[in-house]
Image (cartoon, rainbow over all chains, first blue to last red):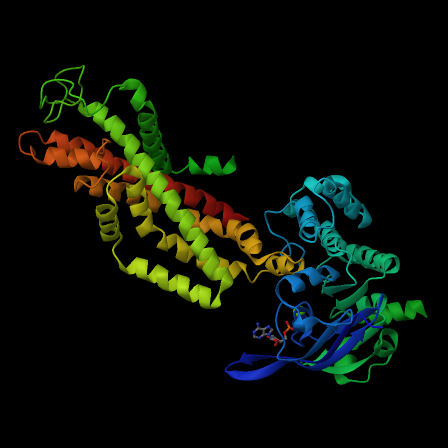
Length: 261
Length: 276
Ligand SMILES: Nc1ncnc2c1ncn2[C@@H]1O[C@H](COP(=O)(O)OP(=O)(O)O)[C@@H](O)[C@H]1O
Ligand SMILES: [Mg+2]
């Protein structure tokens, strides 16, 4: 059984008048409560795949099956309704929210849009969501720009889980955070996955982070899949040139793998 | 608070604010100080200013109190100027947001309509509209707004085009928000500051347009207007120039005040923006 199955996905852009493939013949699957990491150097097409999977942009070719249905066939109201099951966390938690929003409003929107709770119940739901991601409930009345980056990313996660999704796409979701905060957020993600059986499409250029959270990894190079497999195996012994370069570019990785052994 | 302090740091802004404040005071006080009909005869005709202290600015051709007319005229000028500018900003913001956010055919159509309105001189547009529909305060407001909304629409569209690429708009789509709600609740409020920065210029232009319409006899006939007063005074320009000069000076000061205060606001917020 799979939550998400992507096959032969392609997206072409034009660069200097010439078309080039930002994503080229990419296929992968994610099972329930599984974390698949997308790794690759900057510009290898990771964010483009995230946007395609979320239907923020449309592919030029390929197929996306989500929870057993053709996700690309949905449009309008049926697509909006389905979005409850497929959520996203962005890299920059400040840019990811309306600058005028409060924490409560950010969490209220998904509950209201998908009619998950009545107006009277929503404040309680919001408090429960905040607690779930390890935040004080009195944070609800604060403006988004008043809270810290780590708190903001927790709010982003709370928003993503508000609609009880089966898959969350995280595009460099911990890359902008301090190292100490990063560890806590990864803990939170692992905990949520265990409890709610959420699958993650986890995008990162940092193999150390991927090693800590992902079950499997897909390494991209210029829009194509260079290699894929079990995260620890691939990171311990990369076969492709990009894979080797990525491992070499992650000095911390060497240390943590020594510590682990 | 800080912004307010910065606003009062520039002498132009203070002058503008002072002019505006006295104008608003005049407009508000008009029915209290001059409770009667300002268009009623108050004394002998063509009394020069500063001769009779019960009629400090004298009387016009028909013996009406010029000071009372000036106060009541301030009401009309301000009301029309503010209402027309508010209408223009509202229409412009909505059209610009729809065009910028929807893109494609909707954008194309809306921007062609905006082009069409922009190519017709706005005063001609107002003139034509009032002569067809007939002069009343509401029609004058609509006529002025009709020629003034294109600027705000363009600015709003440009701003929306950049905002709609931001992550938080993608985030709103991801949570399944309805596109119109994204456009008007998420995008529009954040696109407003540069649009609102146009308001002083629009209010000033609206006040001038109203005066010009009234001067041509196309203002609301039941209201005293400065433009109407200037037109009245024109017939006796040689013998009683003050009848045109007094409302003329009021008009110039008002436009100047609106402009200076507006610039002050823009400047004080701009500094704040570049600091943050
Ligand atoms: N809207 C776009 N128009 C043109 N080129 C784009 C667009 N979005 C992404 N690209 C290009 O596609 C490639 C992949 O980008 P992206 O998916 O953002 O990479 P990554 O997230 O792995 O760094 C890059 O070369 C980028 O310049
Ligand atoms: Mg990226």
